[in-house]
Image (tube, rainbow, N blue to C red):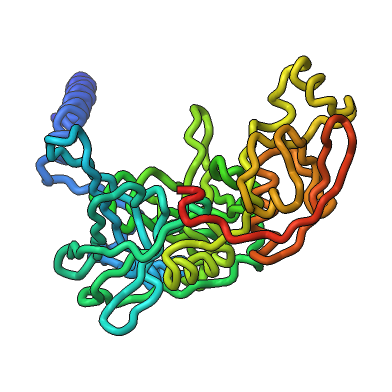
Length: 388
């Protein structure tokens, strides 16, 4: 019998083969990760890796109505610096305040700037700061005229650095919701020609601007901050539609800014250029106050009927004034002008300044000793220092 026909030898060889296979498998399992990491074994993949594209820098040129409007009018918006003397007679201390202004005219080597009266009020020296490509240029300014009632003033400067003149628009056609752009110097010259954008919240809002007059203003939610006073409120055509004048800064209040409508400002600006002030009609009386401010005892002395709650009480009548010629007296209570009720001194002045002219004949309704009376008078021109 040969070697290969031995049953015992066949059985021993089979066991060795099985053990060898097991050992080999273990070796493969143990060393395969090492071979993969070292690159000896490469695993096949069905994923195709996308080629890496080079990084591209894209420049977007923005050319909207807003940017065009700003580019058109922004160079005409300037800073206004007001220098006031403070301290006693023997001191030279100064106080500087800043605001904004709008260059609106250029002729004969001069340029005209409109700003707010309160920006330059009581100023010993006024300067205008013009932004140029190189650096801001500060030039001295002359006050041509100012008006406290409308809070407007006009300055004159040399036009050496002036490159742009603002165009006035039409504030009578404004609509609530249309874009509004405010340009000015909030918080001083560090933020000169800052641009804020909002909408027209109300094109005509009656607002008591000061102790003299209640007037119409433009309300906007475009941010207006201290230093913006006198700056431009602009439409998307790059036209000035208002002169920024104030904001309500109470705690918790946002987006309540106001501007003088440019159509209201135009005639005032022309008067300030030509005359240095705004001639206004006046009656020639001073007042004790509004009727609603009086006590019950005082009302009893005035003998005004109980159903009359609005009116103004005369304190004095100037000699030779329209009121004196019309027969008005101390403690007369004026309740209407040309048939329109007046509840306060502001109401009366607002009507006089906006609805009448010097030389106009008006009718006043008043109570004297409890009796209703009427009189007529011709309005004269107010003295120059009446509201200064």
